[in-house]
Length: 543
Image (tube, rainbow, N blue to C red; front, side, top):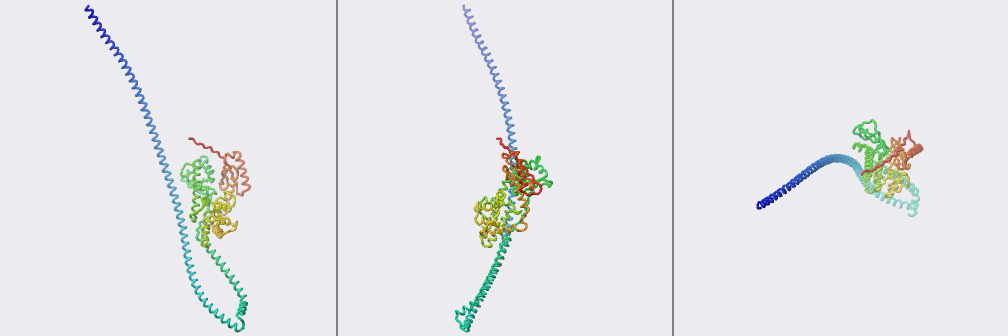
């Protein structure tokens, strides 16, 4: 029985050991499975992390490449901007140098004028000194003569008294009776001598007045050194090479058509090497076309849009030059106050001619002549200069407004509150109204002197300009016409119409109507071509 108990205990112990070992083996198996799963999970996570790292590295590399491309583009843009800025700096420097050269030329001309005026004043001063010495000498002579006359007068009175007494003694007359007898005898002789004295005095005064007037005119003409201006209807623009002619013409001539339509100036490209010619009767349009062409040649990019941009810039520059020309005229003449609109009208005269004579130069010349004569006569010199300068102001817009330049000038002067003397001088300088002051007479005389000097005017040029202006006025008189330009020396009229008002069919009728009016109202050699242009533009901006 003890053996059985021992066996049972041993069996129990062995069972417990087997159970413990089995549990340990089971737990070990479970742990090994968990470790294997954990390892698999770790390997999976590691592989996913490696894939993500590779993708991130690829993305970083792509970003680096994009950044390098952006950097390269920025560098290229920077270089382009630097080149563009350098080009603008060169252009600005060139424009500045040109302006400085023009100002130097203006200063040189002003110095020459001042020197001439100084020489004239010195000459006048010497003449005045000579006259003063002559007057002093004559005054001494008059004093001597006066003394001699006083002596002779006392002697004559003494003799008369003696003879009076003798006559009274001989005739037996009283003093009153003797006086009456003598006066009756001398009356006829005195009347005759008085008439002769008056006549001689009038003749002497007339001779002196004529001499003085001639002297005043001569002095005024000598003090005004005016150039003879030779007007032309063409401007020549130099080209850097012959290849530029083809670029100016453009594909199928589109550039030259666009340029002529925008400027109203005929562009002539012939066999003359390295030049193109701009032909037109309107100096303002021709100057705008010349500046625009010079800018296009310098820029090198020639196409219709660029042409339109350059023409607009040139038009603005010419308008600025017009105002500067008016201010320069005022400064040259010492006029300090004038309405800005009147100054602008004055500057427009720079591009206006009358019988081939530049009207602004003519007006300045008339102002100087009138001022010089007014100074010689002791009149208001500043008022005479102002009246002479503005006497032809109506010619600035007489092509745009109906009426004579005298009527237009009077209206402008009254509108901008010019003095009444100036208004009357403008109105009377062609004899349309009576002159109310000597200043108006001086303006008429100065105008005649300036117009009559040799080479000042050419009637043929004025007739030519008037014919071309009439062509344009006929075309512009129709409703729907936006612009009209006479080109080809008056052999062609190009009429640009508003597309919203004139249809394609209506352009044919318009061309026919203009043709009939030209044939009816104008006299001209050869044929005139009428071209009606209808162009519709649609512009939109993508944002």
